[in-house]
Structures are given as C-alpha cells and as structure tokens.
Amino acid sequence: LGSPPPLSAGRAHSQDVLRLGLPSWVPLEGVQRRDQSVVSPACEVLPKASVRSSSVGDRCTIGGGSKLNGCIVMTDATVGQNCELINVIVASGATVGDGCKLTDCQVAPGASVDPSTRAKGDVFA
Image (cartoon, rainbow, N blue to C red; front, side, top):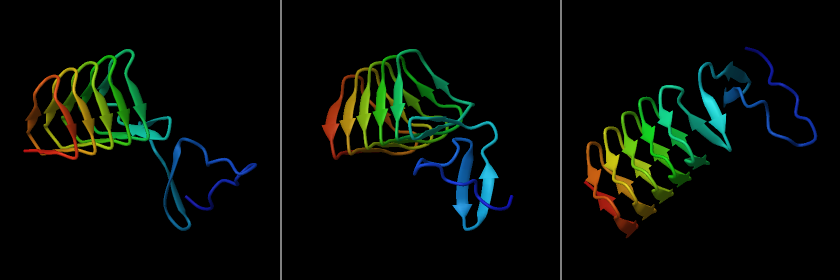
C-alpha cells in the first residue's frame, strides 16, 4: 500500500492496480484486464469473443464470437455464441441464448433469454 504510482504522459496507471480511494492502492491479484474490462480468471471467454469496457464475474462463460461492450456479467452467468450485448446487465445465474442482440437490457438472476432474441431497453425476468 502507500502512494499511487506516478502518471506518465497522461496515461492510465498500471493495469494491475485498482484505485480503491485516496490514497490507498491495492494490486488486483488473479484478475485480468482487457480493453478497459475486468475479467475474472475463473471465467471462460471462448475464442473470437470480444469483451470491451465490461466486467465479467466468476464462473461465467462467454461464447465464441460474442461481443460485449459496456456490460456487467455477474457470477455463474452464461452468454451464448455469436451474441452482441451493448450496455447489458446479466445477473447471477442468468443465461443469454446463442445469437442474441441486446442493447440497454437487464437479465434478472436465473432468467433465460431465448436464442436469437433482438431487444432494446427490455428487462428479462
């Protein structure tokens, strides 16, 4: 703990550090960061999946070819293959079927979204 690392040329701090408040700094042990995202090492991101500006929790599966942008995927959730999720919250234990395109949606804990669903601003419970 102690002082934060110095900024260099206006760039963000090291990828393995999370600022929890002034002036405390704590290393993120075992957590992977990808393109402004936090991805648990206990999740499975399959090939050709893209995770940007998102948070993916423990024991999640992100299907191959899926694209997440600005999403929160909580513990034990599953996103199927070839999905496109933008600003979506997928709660714990929820499942998003293959080929879904969701924007500004919420998927409740344990809920399922049928494959190939297209939705904007909906809540799935």
